[in-house]
Length: 614
Image 1 (cartoon, rainbow, N blue to C red):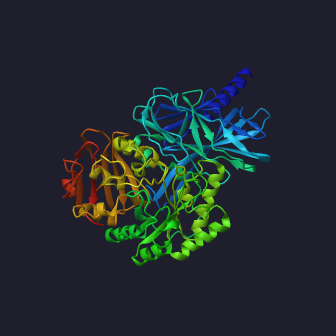
Image 2 (image 1 turned 30 degrees about the horizontal axis):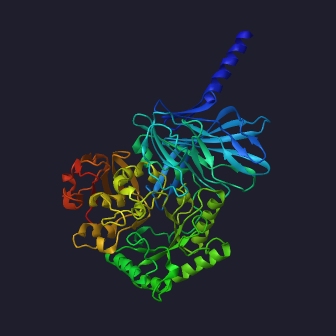
Image 3 (image 1 turned 45 degrees about the vertical axis):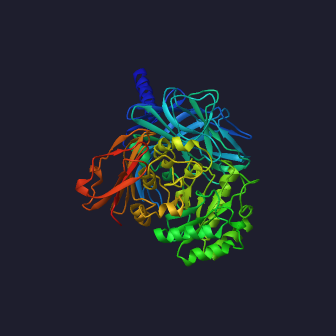
């Protein structure tokens, strides 16, 4: 009898141990509960530990949770199409689990855990019997000292650099997503979140007190929730750099598209009025120059930026819109969200905050032929701001308006749920040549870091490709700048430079590219690269591949190009490289079979391989 009981105990112990391990469909990613921590491994290598599961609410103690077990769920499939982004169709498998916790009073809190071949996602799920406010979270990620990492300091607008570091920083303890780390050689983890809903605030990371423990910390919320509730998904992408760059985890776990008719959503390239003048959109004659540039370069859009409500010389915004439409160029106009920077900030202001005024304003936009709105200066990651952004997206969709959020938080999956969100700033971009001098010396390395960090999680309105100088000079080469239009994904790609720069007679290749440049992609592959040093990327539109690379260093560098996996069709390509002197570029027509296996780039240089016409 004792032998039978012992055997039964051993079987139960074995089953319990088995149930405490979660695996990705291909088995490469494993999450194992061990000593009050979820240990996450990739390819047999420990990548991070997730600990201190718990929530801080206004009237319930959910901070001291006791782990019960991991319950095996089932495999599932994710299949959906994207209008924008790095890939047009996503089809992949996942494996779902449920981690069960109890608080001191026996209340059940579940953590849904989804395992994919490119990472994991988890979220809290519980039920509140009475209204409560979710104040904060205590989930922590281990990022050990000595680990290479690229994380930006937290600011409301997510406009900071991603410098390489190897340990926590005592001078700063608040960090913004996404956070890229290399816990093991050639094995990376990228931390972010997804599926923010109207009752959520967004989160960031804080390692105050424990340098190697990065706590998920929530933005301010005063909203009461009750009944069934879940948090946003906490996302950890895992794998090689190629896996990280190609990952679609942020949209995989976000709500499906809520817009019934999306045929009116048309991505494209935009001429942007601001960078050259630091103003300009209150001047009708300057607006005309950018509309005319769009016509010459065959661009579908023009963006009329701030201060259009204060047009000079007797003109109005209606005059500018009529001129643009008469030339066949679709106008996009700017608004102040009137939640972040208000006093001293440009207008128009206070037109979108009230729902009735917003509907009236967007109805006017639709009537006047406006195709989209750029909305700027938001109040960080608060719940109120998240709800406001969602309301803006829904209202804009009713009036067939594209939306570009600036001075705003990074994308967290709304580009799937509301595909009229065509771009988001949330990046230290070319606009900063207007504001400070530090981008001049840091741009090359910064640009070679963004494809591995910020742009992984969603569209990025960097406003690239500046050949001339603004208030502060640039020292990246012309080939480097042109490569950014392919390396940086944004379904509205805003060209930042002045018309006379793009329209120089010597820029025939650049002008031709702008006319057929895709801004959304069917596939994206990292061919080679390392954050801050260099990047070589291939993006496909239809059957055509566009390849671009940049050198992030202040010295010459030869970039290898592995084209074997692309199966390029036999056709002519334009090979664009550094000219070898100054910042200029040179170009030549090359057949597929003669494409180089490597390109020597100047310091801060770049190259492109683009189809000869589309």
